[in-house]
Length: 327
Image (tube, rainbow, N blue to C red; front, top):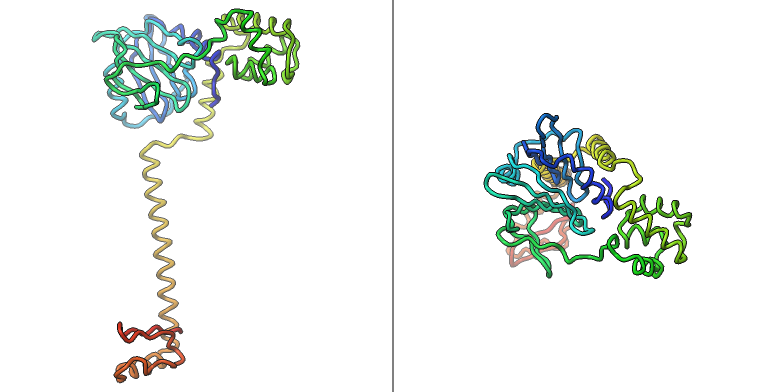
């Protein structure tokens, strides 16, 4: 699947608003993907997919899942039966927070859509109850029993005052589309659309103050109302296609495949050794009479050096009383 931008996360949060007030009925886990079945009163159930580290979106169909693992079972205990009260994006980061009400107290779920991705379940005070991945960096850690910390806050270009924003985009050393996609966080598709809207060459190495001002107005407007068709549907199509083209192996399947590959390597090795022994046996049989005469001479000799010079003898070790022959 594609890597989504910070602006894409903002779009997805708005598209997930129908989940507000919904009850979490069931949770499934397959690979690095989680599927949350939600239900609002008098409405059909909807499946929310959390595919790490890519995206969170409405899913039309989940893959077949096997027996739930310990993590999924614990996640079900903590979250099933709760209601979704709030869905937000942290700043302009690729982090989505779900706030849930539960009979045992509020829950917070942090979904990190960067690096390898992560899903962290916390209590109402922010203490980590269940991390999908325990991690440790110099500026923060994700471990059970400690408070969840957000990554160091990055610059939020959407909330930057216009004069400062214009100055920054004009000072960028990247082509204008790359600056919008990477430094502003629009992503490639939206960056190209913004350039088109302001009649700019996407590869332009520099832009005027007027063009930068136009881009600022466009970006601020699109942050609230993107001019692009719903992203969740596109992501679902991508995900369903990836399941058809490249079915994801389960951990058990990967383990069995590794065992089969190991057995194949062992069979090949034993076959090669058997072939070598067979060839050696054939050569001994072909020169059986000469080998017999050599062995008889060696047994009679008081010193094995007596067989040195024999056509078959390659090496003699009188101390170990061994003879190396070449057939």
